Amino acid sequence: MSDETPLTTPFTARTTAAEILDGVDLTGRRMIVTGGASGIGVETVRALAGAGAEVTVATRNPAGADELVAEFAGPGPGVVRAAALDLADLASVDAFIEGWDGPLHALVANAGIMAIPTRQLTPQGWELQLGTNYLGHFALARGLHDSLRAAGSARVVVVSSGAHRREPFDFDDPQFARQPYDPWSAYGRSKTADVLLAVGIARRWAADGIVANALNPGFINTNLQRHMTEETLRSFGVLDEAGNRIDLPYYKTPAQGAATTVLLAASPLLEGITGRYFTDNQETEVVAGGPEATHGVAAHALDPANADRLWAYAEQTLTSR
Ligand SMILES: NC(=O)c1ccc[n+]([C@@H]2O[C@H](COP(=O)([O-])OP(=O)(O)OC[C@H]3O[C@@H](n4cnc5c(N)ncnc54)[C@H](OP(=O)(O)O)[C@@H]3O)[C@@H](O)[C@H]2O)c1
Image 1 (tube, protein in one colour):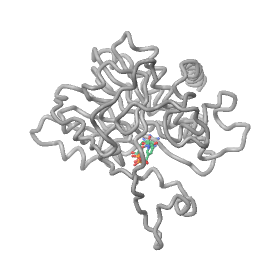
Image 2 (cartoon, protein in one colour; image 1 turned 180 degrees about the horizontal axis):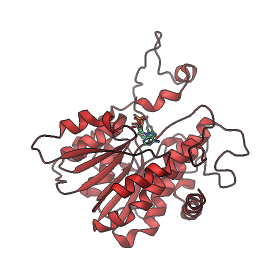
Image 3 (cartoon, protein in one colour; image 1 turned 90 degrees about the vertical axis):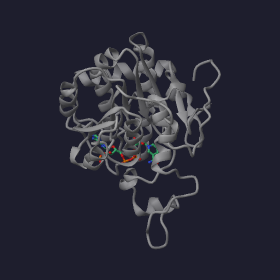
Image 4 (cartoon, helix red, strand yellow; image 1 turned 30 degrees about the vertical axis):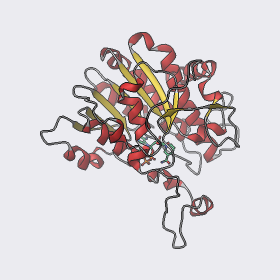
């Protein structure tokens, strides 16, 4: 967080993505939402296109976005397209960048995977959660830099998670090459890296008219939890007697879960704001972090020195692929 007063908005945790953009006209704005074909990504796309934007859903399976594309195929101002992108494979990221033409007003780094039970590797040999959640998005943002600059004023939004609080990025063993693999550590570290990605962009690309912010969407029942065992889900209290998923009282709907993303991507209230972290549509209090931390944004995720060190690590890792 900057030294300035934390940014507040009139919205709450229950505000929906569409309500954030009430009265906002995004006609002529071109946007990309990674992972836009499921979960909170769908509602992010729906709200942005609903306000008139031309939104590209970047997904491993473009056919999975058919319904969303059809929803905006009529004469209304918003348009939705789908394009193939596998963030875990740099060849796919490169092909997506190659296929992008013209200015880009907002890049929403929303796709993510969580708690993969065993250490899996990407085609480039990187631990899968780090490769997908962070390195793929780093490569994508860097490759689209000129398009973001060409927009004149552009925003990068990185969807992180409260899980970032549990651990700082491990610069000594980022790929779990030496230490035992832990699914939640790998997720938490990748989400710390996501916040640091926004901070790194904010530090580098401001003169190009590009801002970047990160967020925690809250708890939403989506496909994200598909790698969690029944035992873990039960310990979280989200399975009923019959084994069906239930929403806890503080869970958000996908439309509410997409609100903070949409606020950062397109609300006039965020004009010129960069390098910050938001939860429930408000800038978030900075805390010490660690496994006991239950709210706020951990200082380790906003640290400019960490952001610079991670940027250098990512550049070097991409170069040596
Ligand atoms: N739901 C929550 O409670 C919660 C809490 C905190 C943070 N988040 C974050 O919110 C974001 C969205 O998650 P969600 O809850 O909406 O889950 P979701 O429904 O599982 O959506 C995640 C999306 O990421 C995409 N994805 C996964 N691996 C990919 C890859 N290699 N290349 C391209 N796309 C890939 C998925 O595409 P496929 O359809 O191809 O799998 C899916 O569309 C994630 O970054 C997550 O970490 C969610």
